[in-house]
Length: 424
Image 1 (cartoon, helix red, strand yellow):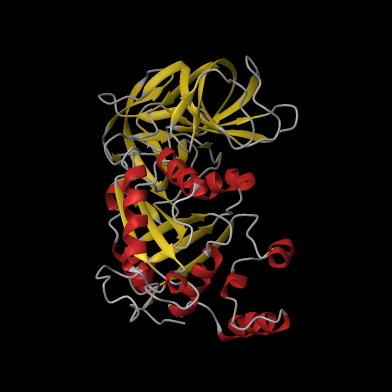
Image 2 (image 1 turned 120 degrees about the horizontal axis):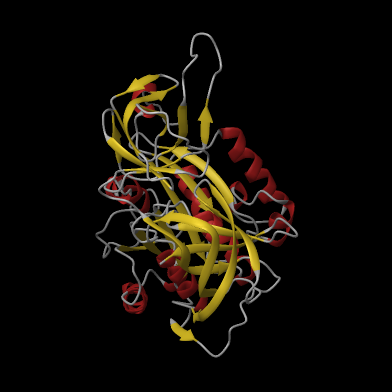
């Protein structure tokens, strides 16, 4: 394992990234190669997958076995569930969400990508840009992932051809130019042999850009979080009821956007009452200021009736308050969306019920065209809806704040999450 100081390690950036691509594009192999070449796995782990590879009669150590944890995945040689892996280098900490490539597991990609700063989309150099490539790029755009890295894999099978790589780059560039993706990078790699993953490839001297690990370590993510709009969804009200803290009333939660400082004027929604921040408390002690995504407890100078689901904001910069919400929905359930159907809805820390007022259109993710004559929304389909909630929500557009702009729909009969929504 790589050695570095504990103090520096605790203060390092955390980059969350997801991998996506079609079946057999090499996502699990790439992550295995990333972990192995960056010395982030133990010798006994490597020996276990080497023995497993020998037992399966494979000619090489199958690094994909590091992430394919389910028995069904190992038997079929595919990824089914979202596999999370953690590793660190001297420059940054990482959480990887390895998501499935099959069309029927698109919902798992939505789950894995929902908190990611960066998406790695793998493209098989022999096949080029295919339907699933477009689907995954569109979902990355829809989920507001700021950075996308297109890794053109299996370059060893096309004789390390610069022409093949450039043709794929042009085609993918053409497609993503119609999407809302701020930052796209292209890297030619061989996950199996390790070219341009951690170490620079001697087989592709024509490529002068960074290796994948180098890009992951240096991509700028500090500005990905909204520090302009102060949003504090109240998760829990702390009343110790003890002699020492007899009058203590704190509001615990995770800052969803912006910065809060002691003495700041704040407004509480939905009541509209105003106060000032008296203290910002944490387990380690009090702070003078706190910012997203820190978890803290705020106390206010005035006693105001505040409960879970309320939101503390700055008076000069409030979110939208409304019972009518326009959302892009990724449908996650085999049971189709019911027009005029009633669902439970979770938004930030607030639980309400809602009705589907209108299905406006669904999206053909391959052509990006709106389909307005077919309003049946099934598993893995993406559509635009109008919802009406039983109580007002306090929200921002998803493109501005992923925390206050996202919601989920739940089937009240089965308690299953059926839809993931991005507020427009």
